[in-house]
Length: 204
Image (cartoon, rainbow, N blue to C red):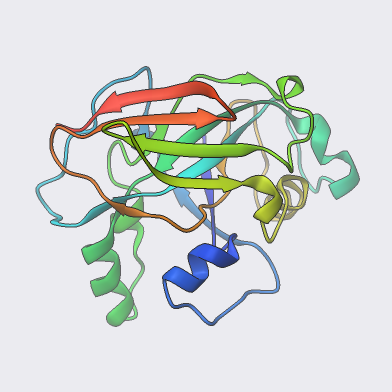
């Protein structure tokens, strides 16, 4: 099982991060399968970072083997979606970028890809018009709508499949809007697609 993630996919997030660069193609990075955190298990703050941030995202699960998928056929390759958190060790990421080094350690560390329970994509009218939000300690801290994506889901799938064979069970984190921020011990994170609670866990 592979975990793909998309960077720079919401203009609002790019603005809050003061990024002026905009790629002409989706920006893809990967997390190892050891990054997966599911079933409501707690997220333990790592000892190597003092600034771990949440990034709330729509996540799609691949349901068919595919390579070089045409964008018009991409909708056939996933049938379940959920909300997830792409945890980022922001201080490590900043340091690695300043040195011009890869920053996998800031994105791919253990339990850095939290996912909620999956629902059928048929439960939403339009995958590119889905509201999602994150609450921490009963306060909404981040919200977005998939219509704000720079690169929509089907284009992302088509692009990834040019380079990587997609397999059943692979996950794609599709990018985060503005509103990212740090997490702390005892925080209670709850994620929603529309008004449906799919993600619920605590920080230890």
